Length: 208
Ligand SMILES: Nc1ncnc2c1ncn2[C@@H]1O[C@H](COP(=O)(O)OP(=O)(O)O)[C@@H](O)[C@H]1O
Ligand SMILES: Cc1cn([C@H]2C[C@H](O)[C@@H](COP(=O)(O)OP(=O)(O)O)O2)c(=O)[nH]c1=O
Image 1 (cartoon, rainbow, N blue to C red):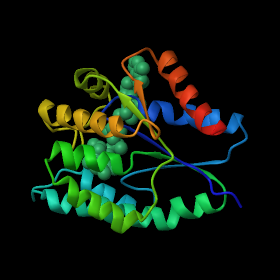
Image 2 (image 1 turned 90 degrees about the vertical axis):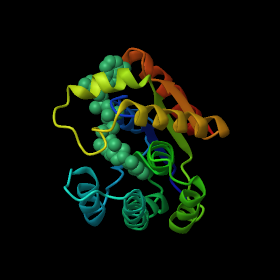
Image 3 (image 1 turned 45 degrees about the vertical axis):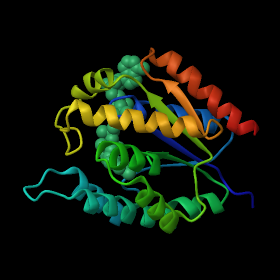
């Protein structure tokens, strides 16, 4: 059985990840590709419980180290119980955020040591890396304005603009290192144009 492919969707707050998830599913289905849609942090029962711990606001300050380890704890469950089994059955996996978010939020946003993240990545993922990462990129102000309409803010969404500027920079730096894996999508454009760019990137992967 041919191994399924692994696509991740990344970007800051409000850039349109949720909006485009169903669209990508549709494109893949039209090309007769079976796809499993999932997200991080989350994707299994335990990982979703960890997600709740990470996103809810609490009186006890969550240290950056605890945050980083919880992200990878959830990821370990997700990879073993959802991502790898699906790929081994030949299905494609489309994941709303993955380890690039750790490099961007914990590495860029929280200024954590990138070597430490790389070490945990190796421990938890071995050689597993996405085949394609769609990075939806837009100026922070645009994303925040769009996200504001969603109502109650989670623990990350209450961070200051500086934090999100660092997140954006870290994403862009990573994407510039590997133009084969990353496709940077200009998410400030109207949805129809964003989706045309996404379709092009998916088609390239389908024919690769
Ligand atoms: N290209 C776009 N142009 C204008 N509005 C958009 C665009 N993409 C998404 N939106 C809107 O922005 C808001 C946030 O999008 P969402 O998909 O929830 O972002 P994310 O999941 O990345 O946080 C939603 O109201 C959505 O309809
Ligand atoms: C996967 C991952 C997410 N996160 C953060 C980014 C988001 O703020 C949050 C998950 O929320 P999510 O609902 O995916 O994001 P959005 O609000 O853009 O729809 O977790 C990290 O800090 N590190 C990670 O490794």
